[in-house]
Length: 166
Image (spheres, rainbow, N blue to C red):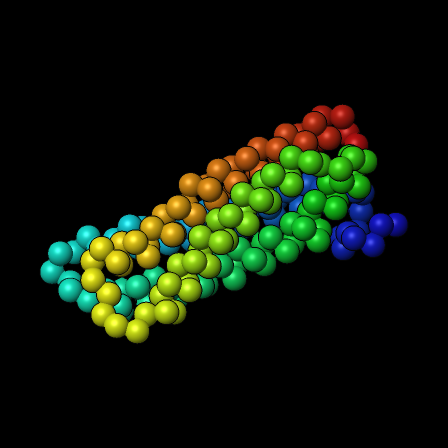
């Protein structure tokens, strides 16, 4: 018995459970990503605000929380999901390497935002605040694409497996 899998039963059930978990986590991450995008997009919009430090710090709290959830998801994929798929289909899946590079790029944008806000030592005016928020705005389409593509590939593989009953 392969020790990577924790549920009891046929590997097909384990794969289907993992695919369901992936879908559930992607849904939650997508909701968090959208919320983060909207918060970042609002930075600099209100012309009456002179100093954006507090607003940036609030977005930073959201971004840090999202980053933790994203890291936990990524760890699960790398330690459980991808090895399961590689074992189940008896092949290495090169397409996940590129997708994980996209994921890492998005994480770098999030990290750049967190560092920029951590480095604030003076008032932050509108243009500088918008520049800081732009890191998060750049992460958004990358992660959107990443979640969608990963979901499509894994769901297609699981559907193929279910159709053949293995």
